[in-house]
Length: 153
Image (cartoon, rainbow, N blue to C red; front, side, top):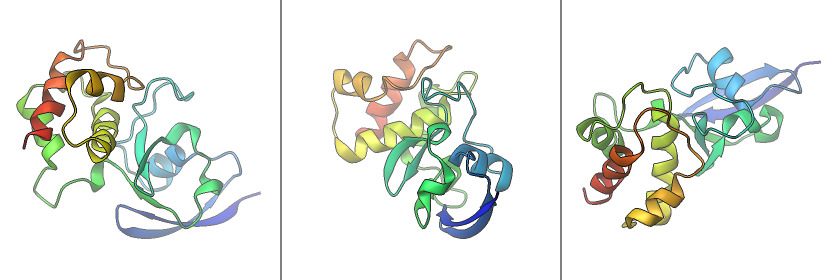
């Protein structure tokens, strides 16, 4: 039986009727059409579905929609201003840390949390901070460089 939830996504309020097993990822992609947040493993093992929930990075595939009543969600679409990239997005582009792009949105959202917690991280801290996000293309070097670039911006 569907239940009504209210949440704020990227600054916009939404009321959505969801089944008890609906995840935040499902709400974002299927109900709101926000496709930047990717579906990967559906078990919290790859990080490509990372979003911010009340300012903290979470795996949206592991977060039930019914548990986020009245919460604020920020997705990759909510970063930056209209026609202006967030410094992390800009750094990922400039450093060529995008390759296939599938992990990029989750990686950026995780890096955003990392830089909020540790504004000037060293390489080990960056690598540890993004350890919950898998990238099958880049070997992580360019991703780490992009996060360093954003930290120094």
